[in-house]
Image 1 (tube, protein in one colour):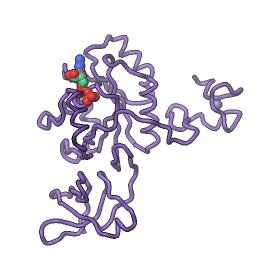
Image 2: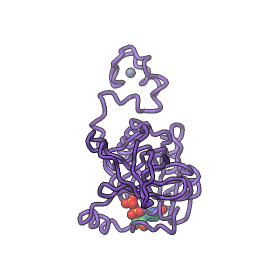
Image 3: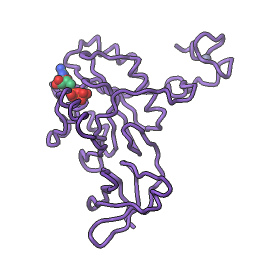
Length: 263
Ligand code: GDP
Ligand code: ZN
């Protein structure tokens, strides 16, 4: 059997990238029977059929899975905001960070785009808020700033860009992959396309062993599905958790709260 990774799925067919080529695969009926759905990003074992096609025999264990877009085994999440127009919504940024942390994504970084429109003071403010906690890249697709840094951080990984619309995610992807020009920067066009066709999730091969999740769906999100305590998802809290006086401390107005002392 050959091992590969599902990079695209369309109507029950899966395209599996093996070391040598991308193979169109169907799945064994047993998957359907057991209600197992192969997912873009899955590592799979396939056997080859005579017509150069394949059949998926086994799905290897997933290290993580996102629901919208449905994609598995993400290595890197780039939480993208623009410094202005639209300006950064810190609450939303925190939500994206929490979501990424809760999904077991190893590499989480913050990308602040449109820094051509920012003052040094704006940039320093963001740096002082998050710089000790997450890697931050300041980019401008207009002035070609930070693009190479972003590429270096994504190398050999499967990366999902998350962030509100209008911050420049498509522009960043296009700046990194000039030949792909996968999406226009025109939001109204995107909305229209979303209405008329159902877009499939796809792993876009950026360069060797490096993929970008091509999906417009990861823009707004809710963290309601998370369990009651989200404190474990605040990376900067972790080393202090468990040291508060009350074991179920909400770190809001409880006495002897270590998190509050550390603020
Ligand atoms: P998305 O919705 O996050 O994919 O954002 P788009 O890539 O569609 O970009 C939204 C708008 O921001 C477009 O009009 C872009 O031309 C503009 N834009 C993207 N990157 C930059 C940048 O670095 N600087 C400035 N000033 N505008 C940008
Ligand atoms: Zn506390």
